[in-house]
Length: 285
Image 1 (tube, rainbow, N blue to C red):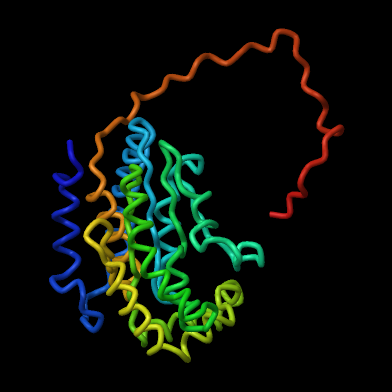
Image 2 (image 1 turned 180 degrees about the horizontal axis):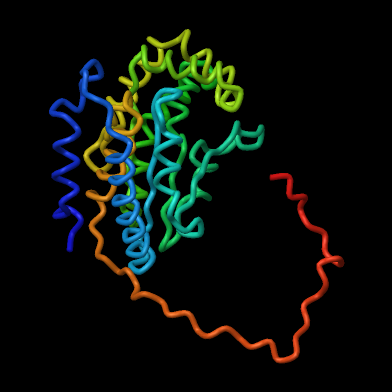
């Protein structure tokens, strides 16, 4: 049965509110029980999608772009949480090397594209050139213009080759980003998430907004449109993104039948080595 007919779709839509694009609405927070229940249902569907991708030899690429602290990593974590890392892979490339800077711009991304039966999630992608590289001056004007000439054709080429390409942009308000940055500053376990580039993005909020508008102007094409996620509410953003992902890739339920464990092999004279010959982790807790 198609996931589109699942009862949770109607239930989730009713709980989500009527205006999904309004960052200033006053919707109540999702109850923890409801959120965890819906997430579990969606993750079961993701496992079904994974098995379908493997069975059909599909090649899926999902791009996650957006403001710093918009919640991209949290969504990626919930998508991959129950999936096989050999099938569902996350790509988060670092700063390009001098050699990579001299290559064709898309060259460093091509080796990370999926083979048959794989799904690749790009935690930021080739759209770095349209965002941070443009705003921070890491590329020339000619490289920037060439990106917009090449990118739509590059993506059309991927699609013609059989790749399913899905692009998400996570939109977060100025106020919510400020709150999340402050939360990271005050939490020693999260400070690593704040890079100098993240802090600079706060000072250049308007420039990033203009860069995003320009990016959409040239790359929001019919073959691979941008899907904007209202990310001010992290839990809703996670559920809505996963729900949408499941809706754009048709799949069938290939859940295997329950497995029956075989009887355990008998010892037949085997004597276990003494514990004194092994080195154990200290039991501090």
